[in-house]
Image 1 (tube, rainbow, N blue to C red):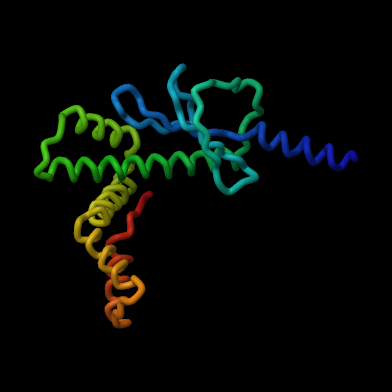
Image 2 (image 1 turned 180 degrees about the horizontal axis):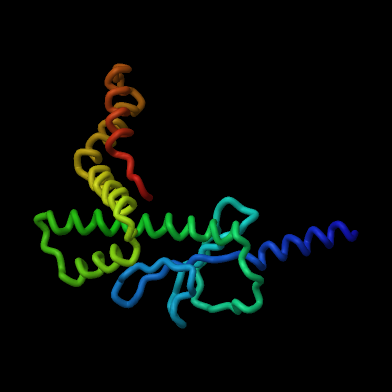
Length: 189
């Protein structure tokens, strides 16, 4: 009986020492990602980072818990939290940069408010390190291509070739699949 109680106590301690990352959108539509809790009353997505698990779990929360009840995070938890924060920030940065590029070079009218929101989201989430920022800009360019009409058409042609009754050659399938994999796969989801 004691080993079972010890296991439960260790399991509860691991859950209690979980660290979290928060993602929320402010009143202006700017996306924030932080290990700090959002302002009071702000609806946020809470992503748990646990040392004993490889992935975080997500929950939506408007309530604020007591930080004093939790023990300090371990170095492994801090590293995992920073990895999750970096990944989420990169995702938001890339999406904002791609949207800015698409909206400023397109023929559709775009509101200054939307452009400002995207610029603020990029400023908050893109890296200040020039090398990392260049990587994020390259990912945004790849995302723009992956979202382009050329890639939509290529994926549709590939789907048509894979339909029952279609009789594509092996070379047609291979060529189109290689194009889709090389150019039409989004670097972030």
